Image (cartoon, rainbow, N blue to C red; front, side, top):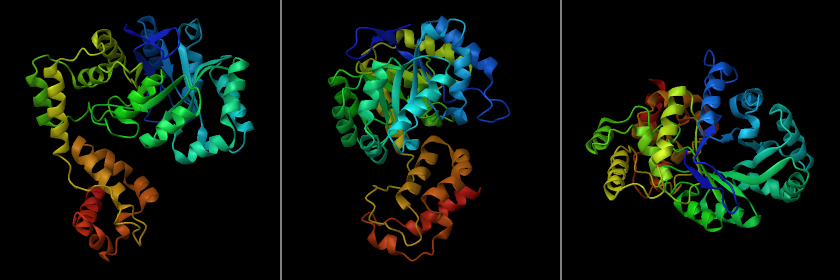
Length: 378
């Protein structure tokens, strides 16, 4: 297993990390983890060199930590760096930090968390953490041995990311990064900034939640096939991330033993700067192919907002474009009601036309919202 140095610390970790957010389940119930299959996968991974295991308070409806605690018994716990995350959205007062950490220690059946992250930071959550003095909590938890290294996972813009990096002497951070998300959230700029500060950088969503693996458009698959290297879409996508020397660990939410074996094989040879100029050119061609599938040329300027009916129009266009780009219309239909409840229901459009009058791109917004409604009903 390839290993990479953990930031400014004098130890290294496996380049592949096991993410415990998408474990196999029974009867499609997220909280009914198939413990036998999960144990087989995790034990195989650890036995073959994977020593970074990542979970969180909320994963699998709060069952991931519980199941992982049982699976790591019998000697496996001491063979891994165990990472989990503070449920930042539940923090209301300073004492809550200790409350949830102690719950997590109990669930995981351990006396220490190796890598403890403030989970899914954005501007609002970060402000709450600062107001409740997250810094003294992390210092105290380090001193009493409940956590070894402090980090954060992130979902906001790169400016906020840099501010958080600079706000505390973090050991590591976790960001979303893949070949389609170079400028998304922290992106390449944030990756290089954190690495430049000697933080270890853990990568989540290297396969964009499976979108870079499932239902691959024929034209994208043809580009990959032309390389003649016979690699799978997952192999290519992971290699792209590992090609960056600033990356420490790449998390993969593996749900099958076959995926564990395949990713371990990829990790062994996907070294920093190992992609050829021809490989990198292929990725540029793939990215352009995906971008050509975008249905709505919305720039996200938000001149169309606020909509009198509460419809967050640019967000709907993002979801609709993603469904076209990655052939995920079934997922779009399943999520239609949830999106409607959180970002305004496009069914409520009264076709007042205010949005179109304000749109610099002259988009036919009313007609596009009809198409979105139709796609959600199909």
